[in-house]
Length: 403
Image (cartoon, rainbow, N blue to C red):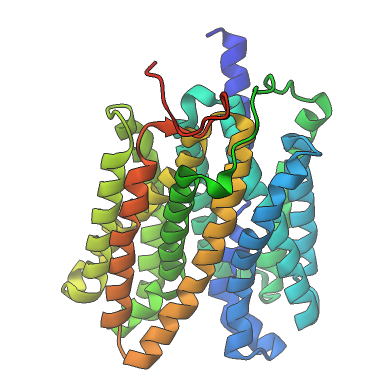
């Protein structure tokens, strides 16, 4: 590889990271500020809870529609538009009323959903030989962006003295910078890969596509359960509010290690099935340790849970590129897997809370979470086989040819 090609690839990955860093802070920064938002705007508990659920529902609903946009616009245009709309939504969200808060939240959810679906297609198009590695970098950036946003929201609020609007409004700055970074590439244009012969695969009738989708949905459901309830579980076990929040931060940062471990391990494997089994085992052990191990082991359990969730998320995203035969299929599979997957994920925190209210404890909810962690292994093992969804001579689910 020449020096110019190396610089081009590095800049391409950098652009992907810049987008990824902006696709989760809009959600992650709300939790630490939720009490202030409720007090300022006089929101009920149910209304406040919708602030974190609404974007996830947008991820699902608009994720299903985003591939249609790709048929009319290049990926670069979509990512610029996504960052610009995200910037606008973040600013609207800091308005004076509940109406502006929820309108801005809806707009940010739509913008993020377009980015969610578009980036995996870009990875498949621009880095077809390094899908697992680039996807791991992308998912790591998603995790780091969320962790940083949740960690600095309260300190920025306290330092500014202006309440919750300042930290939420400042999130518009990196979103705008990411849009500007992609703008030059959007103006230059990109040479699309040659069109692939054959009719497009019918993903909604494709078993492999549904296996990828099921793994994405179940993994994401558990991720949002952790995001929404892990601090509360830790507080009920006797940890202080600050320590309970730190447990979530530790688990979130460790997810980056789990994501980066995926390509390192994958290079030594014939397919991804051993990784799927490891994700299931780590997730089960982490959930069990958080609730049933001695309190002193909660930190260790959070570390294990973070590894499992980070690897699981990176693997779910990697399956989109690995199982798609070309960039066009990857875009459609991304919309299907993330659209349906996030609709499934949106039910997790709500159902988890109902189970806790009905049973008065965490044994049953966590038992159900462990059962889901075991269940996700089934479609994961199927999706982990070395196959691709192709449109060659009308046949799909072709075995991958060894390099």
